[in-house]
Length: 416
Figure 1 (cartoon, helix red, strand yellow):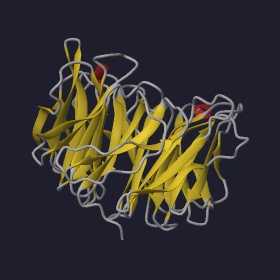
Figure 2 (cartoon, helix red, strand yellow):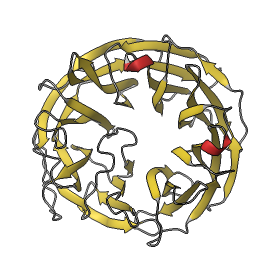
Figure 3 (cartoon, helix red, strand yellow):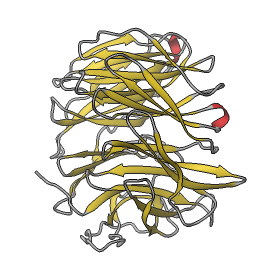
Figure 4 (spheres, helix red, strand yellow):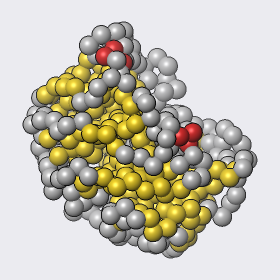
């Protein structure tokens, strides 16, 4: 089993300057940043201005990066690259996942399918009048399984906001069907590629669905926003049985946007969402057994983008907070019982136009990565920081200067 003891992956979906693949400088020097590793020879702007999903899956010492080349308007191909963290080498580079003749395949998401012991990557097809969702298994050695037809819209429209989580035996893929009054549907994908569904999960007017799995209860939790300034959730087991549709209480009024859903162990989930007019960041703790939930306000700063991770028995968030006309990056710590231990902790030393944070936990260290747009709205310097267990800034490093210049996709290691 490969285990990285001193390095954390920071997936930097940025527009960087160099173009060749370079060897990794393995270093345990605190604050030292490795050489850039080019995982794509193709320029891309995908995920440049979004925070979820991060397009990085960890498994057994490997970092699996999946990405969509939306600059190629002819085919818009989807690729997978696999990096061996311990050995410091690329195992699979630019594996073309969708068929070469495919057009209009977009927004890939992926999860490690536990029973299949392979990556399951799924994506939308927006090339025709009827929306579709496809998937494919990818082994660590780069072997591609057959393309799986997961779902087709029931009328003219699109299947969007596709999300995925793996259970012990099956993976649940959820999506919104615009042809059916914007309902959320789900499909269960087995290790042999067989598909159960689609089955209806939500009533009309749903948006921003999210899904996560709790191993202790053996259930998936699906959460979505609904018209009328509400959020709802529903349990789904691996046989496709549905629990009741339940409303989530909230401390906010107005439009609610679910932003991140994770399992935090002990039969609990954490949902981070943004309140009315981006003026509140809240976390709701949901219990799998009873369905009870506790809602807390984490920050009242104006925010749009955030990320969240479970580490050291607690919930950590990084988010951009706006004061006046300036965005900066902050962190917060919330317990699994719903108590806010700290919030609005500054984790960047620069001030103004700090945007789009990501948070990663490798089992030992928490690393936040974000973009500094002070020099240009279209190019960015990239910064990273390790975060202490109390949510305070540990160490900040400049990862790349002028990271948004020419459109390559890289990953880098940050020494801890």
